[in-house]
Image (cartoon, rainbow, N blue to C red; front, side):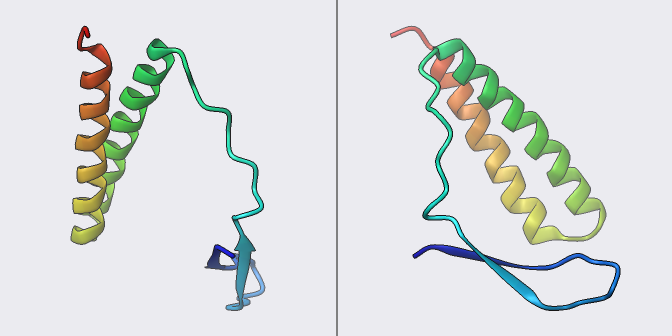
Amino acid sequence: MVAIAFKKSSPSLDNSVEAIDISSMNSSPRLSNETEREEVALYLAQMTGELAALARSAQYDLLGYFLEMARIEAKGHAGVLRTPN
């Protein structure tokens, strides 16, 4: 069983932790169209870049670093998808 735990956000200041079993969740259908995959990779690069900047501005340096690595990875995938075979 794979589970993710997170704090409940509620106005009652309840600090309990809720676990979700993600192994039973249906995954999204895979994109087969290369253009769609490239668009997704570019979108992910843009969003993770913005999140990395936000994290760094809040002095979450390690989180900013990981988000920047995710941005670079996404841009790399977009570049791979653009390269002719």
